[in-house]
Image (cartoon, rainbow, N blue to C red):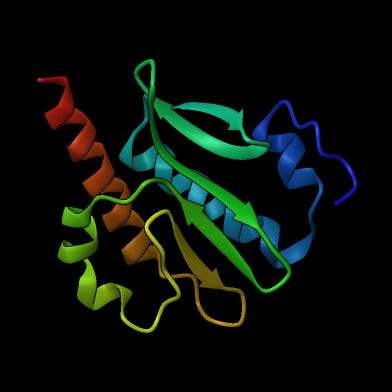
Length: 124
């Protein structure tokens, strides 16, 4: 991964190969399904999805042994998805999805839906 001045998500994906790209593309497609109006951007040299002017739904980054999905997770979201997050490495802003385990599509979709609902509630 030599290039570090990405302008698009496709450029970011092109820096990787194989299953990592497939997993990132799956996450991207889930975002498009849950939040079709989300704008695809690069922020902090990582793929991100923006709702409105300032709200970032999620970011993601690839690493040698995992993909991290990132955002400042709310306490409400972490509590609501506590059971699903058991056994995963998480922090207040990152959830690691190990490459040696199946991509937890239901969890990623639940996170996206929760984050989208938080954005919608914030707009009111």
